[in-house]
Image 1 (cartoon, helix red, strand yellow):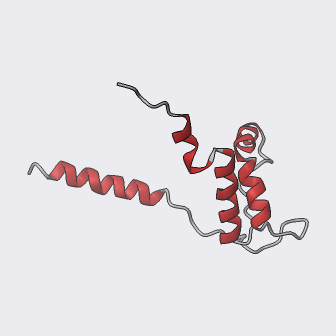
Image 2 (cartoon, helix red, strand yellow):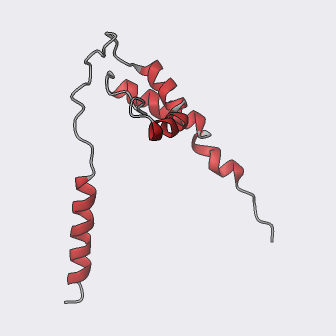
Image 3 (tube, one colour):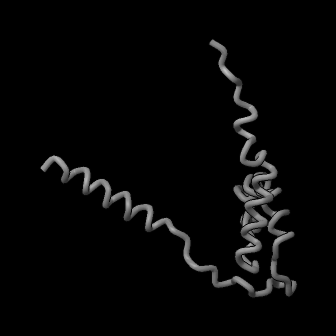
Length: 102
């Protein structure tokens, strides 16, 4: 009986996380109004400017952080690569941490 609340909480958390997963992008490989599909290089640029774009997107409904008219995995790889460049890469947080001396 003691494990029942833990099991219910685990099931609830699993359902909540499952409900938040992303669905398929129906606009993948579909050209936008200008006839273009975003690729790797545009992904890098969009990832690089993503912090600024996010702030602007809070106040404007015509600005989006992520381009939905993309070519799939290469765009997403470029986006994550560009976002990691602006955030300092995987070592950015570790480089700022001061070492403790005893």
